[in-house]
Image (cartoon, rainbow, N blue to C red; front, side, top):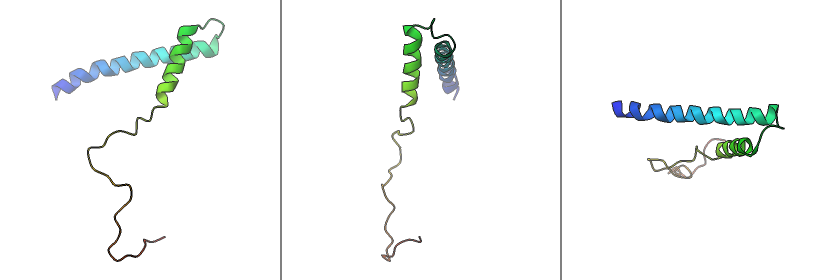
Amino acid sequence: MAVRGVVLVPVVALGLVVGGLWWWAVLRLVLIPQQAGLVEGAMAAGGWGLSLLPVHVTASREITRASPRRRSDGESGPS
């Protein structure tokens, strides 16, 4: 259990740093676009692109079916 905590701290810190850099880039593009450059644009676009990834679609450990099992009596369920 202690190993998870040791690994989790750098991951969270990295996420906070990258998130802070993304916000910095977006704010520079919005507030002072004449001074924002290629780095800010790439950082903002990259972060936005990552937000579009379907992270909720991940491999599941349990086997699922596309539809529920049919009832043995052959009748449809309640509407």
